[in-house]
Image (cartoon, rainbow, N blue to C red):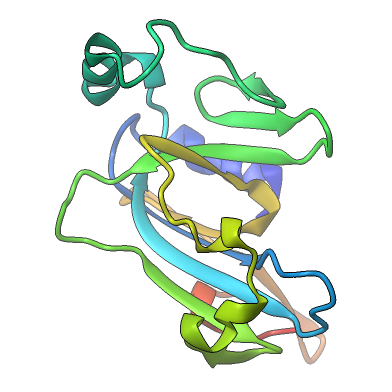
Length: 182
């Protein structure tokens, strides 16, 4: 997605509301791997939350699981707090997301090898250990340019697919399908 599309989604989504987010990104692979490995994720998440005001964070600070004070951002700066950040090293924009509130809804994750869907076990030996760690705590970030969809009840934001003949069409594409387009 383009930065302006993400800003539109931020403007239309109520703070803290459950939304559907999808992204596709290259997998982190071991040195020497020539195959193109991608990861597609569709999940229910939330945005627009102040990390320090979250009940779980306050409880962890009180119990000593987390430092008493926020340690700040590591290698990032706020562009639009509490939504958008920028990497100090690459300059890429990131969106801050939080887990959805439902315990019943799990992320839908798919892996692709050279455009063909595979199981994680099939490509496990090619992945870095950091790719295999799925724990991210109370919040996480995704690169804006990896996002393929942010859906709220108010509005669908879609990726522009490109030309069909001479005409350009705007259609919703599931992240799972987008990962196969190269």
